[in-house]
Length: 112
Image 1 (cartoon, rainbow, N blue to C red):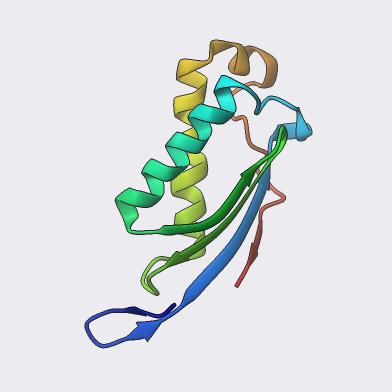
Image 2 (cartoon, rainbow, N blue to C red; image 1 turned 180 degrees about the vertical axis):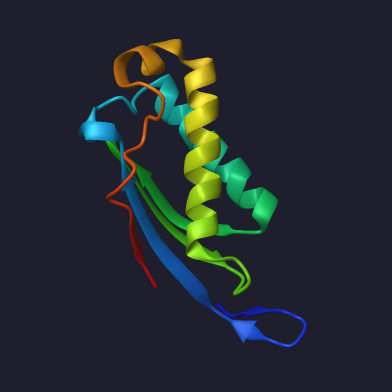
């Protein structure tokens, strides 16, 4: 489905995948529910449409559609940074188990 800008027509989709630090299986139950909510909120604020998404115990898959003026690196920074920070504030056991960041710093996959 094509979306329209002031002088453009586009259909940009990114498949984004990232994992937890050391692939710890910490995304389950209430943490997974809250993560899903945070990702939806983050995408909504930037006008990003989630086409499909899946949250596993140690990884996140998202197929998203966005305007051409948002770089994939900005999207990842928004989604990972905000959700990691908020999850650690709400679920203190994550920080105790994993440390300062629940996501690994490397291993991000983006496909256009």
